[in-house]
Image (cartoon, rainbow, N blue to C red; front, side):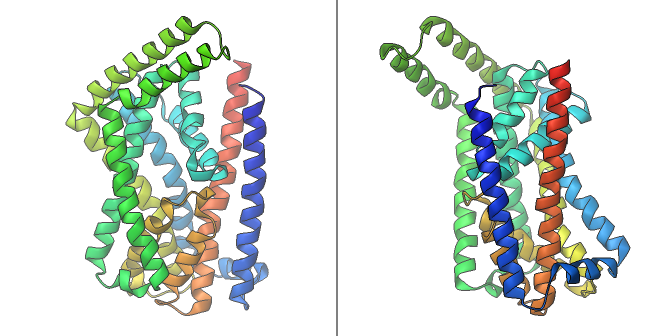
Length: 344
């Protein structure tokens, strides 16, 4: 690994940490009557069963991404253990959270996959398919939420509705782009080949033919993997199912937390529907973890379903579990996995 990349990731990690502190501080300031001490007290007096289920669901979001990646790799002929899948997942979750527009997640996951002997082309095709199914899952969950609660979208402010509708459009376009990239590898590799030639002509790199041959090898592996997995309905089906479960695991957390702190059981589906739409509203925005935007959408949506203080409480606890704690644990697991790999 070169020296520039770790330093760049460190800078984004610091920025993300400061943004997280600022977001939490702003939310607490707006809530007025809620402090960290109050949150701890609420957690201590919550319904333990629902709260633990919320924590488990949040971790299932991380676990099932690994399951989804491993299911694709298995059909591509590179079966890996669930623990390996967990490392691919945690590296994606952690670096996606500390980089803008999740730019670091997939390369980090690909790094660990290639370290485990998976060719770069296979890893790339696997991640493109997984990203496509991840995006489709969010869209499907959004559609389901509207069917469950038709009025949910209209119970947001105008700005929130604008973000959610824009999110539907942006995610649909992204899913289509991933599908095209899976079928048309030239869109990825032709620009890379031209870039190598350009850099060589400008005398910025050496060994042009060696580098071109390496990219061609990755391209052939990518095409082979793409043809293999995209031609199997069973592969696509399970890739979607695991990603659907992964997304649903995270989306049900606010619903479980809401009930755990005394919310009405009859409103569980409404909280779920709103959180599905909220996820669409911030998932396409190029901010690490959607920090700030996701918090705004959650408070805006939930405060129309429950009293304002409870809305702030549900938002703070849910985000604390699904984002801040999950990202921290994912970072720790990624570091341990990286260090163990270096020793080997």
